[in-house]
Image (cartoon, rainbow, N blue to C red):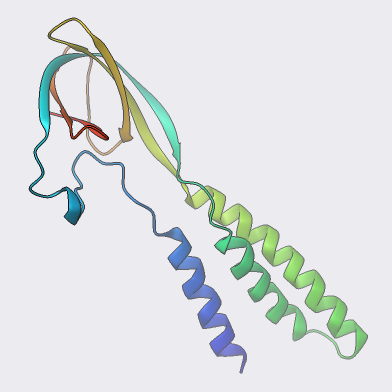
Amino acid sequence: MKAPIIAVALLATLAGCAVQPNSANVYNARQAQNEQSVRMGTVESVRQVSIDKGETGTGVLAGAALGGVAGSAVGGGKGAIAATILGAVAGGMAGKSIEANASNKAGLEITVRLDNGDMRAIVQDADELFRPGERVRLLSDGRKTRVTH
């Protein structure tokens, strides 16, 4: 009986960790075959940042479920009830912390001076190396802009 509950809680936790990438190298199916404007420029500066993907609450729920199940296995009677409640609270706090840490991702703030003199700053995943002085392309579909080599 407890194994299915634990499996569901773990799946819910993993589902909560699924986040959209902010990579210049990843396109979703809706973005394929859409025209983008291209502007050329030179990297002025690169700064490491943290991209917070946000919390869904899944970590709290999954942690509380797991903690409650673990706590219910302790003692009997009123002791088991207290252990279940304490396990759920502790599990919820641990789950919240785990989700918060998992939802932060390394990113870059790339400042680019366009060929027309305008400056732009774009934040994206830190999955490609950029250096000041490099020539880059800014690809924009009107909503999202990516910096690529």
